[in-house]
Length: 233
Image 1 (cartoon, rainbow, N blue to C red):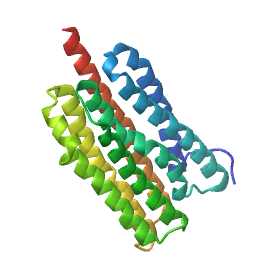
Image 2: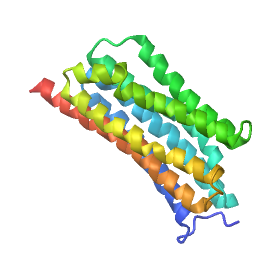
Image 3: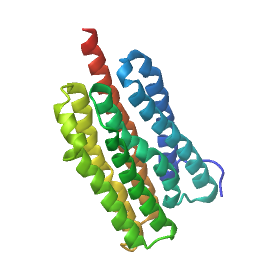
Image 4: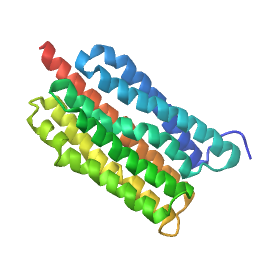
């Protein structure tokens, strides 16, 4: 295989694009954290760490693609099992920064996310029936959705009286609902619906990660900046 990324290699180019975008986002989040109110520090650290970990994964995936012409989607679970729980826990951290939140919410969100990711990881790697992995993963994801909309998280957000937190919570809850559904659709197509063109699937997953990690983080940054400006006014 050629060891250089070729201009016509759209998939390899998307790996390179997102790896640079992730490291750039991580640097931005860490640098901007100092300009924001202290109560947003942990949340900004989380989105920075998420982007940083994903950038390392994508640099590796890009190199693997260039050298071997492949980057198995199952490899992504190494990234997802680390970054998805942190992503979901940003909701808990945001709420905790402005109001009292019981620790039980932390564990419910964490366990729901791990059930989702680990079940589909086991299905993708062949340690579990792909159908069972899909169904258990869906249950874990829907449990998280239920917590964010109708559970304690949703109720506390509605009553927290902080417009910036409520804006970020509402927008990122939509991302968890719509953007994260892409991963389930991809799993279903790849493992249960006869497979798909791996090049197209990689591009779709790459674009989904931009939405679900970088834009997710930028929404939090925007809310934090708005909240900081209000406090300073």
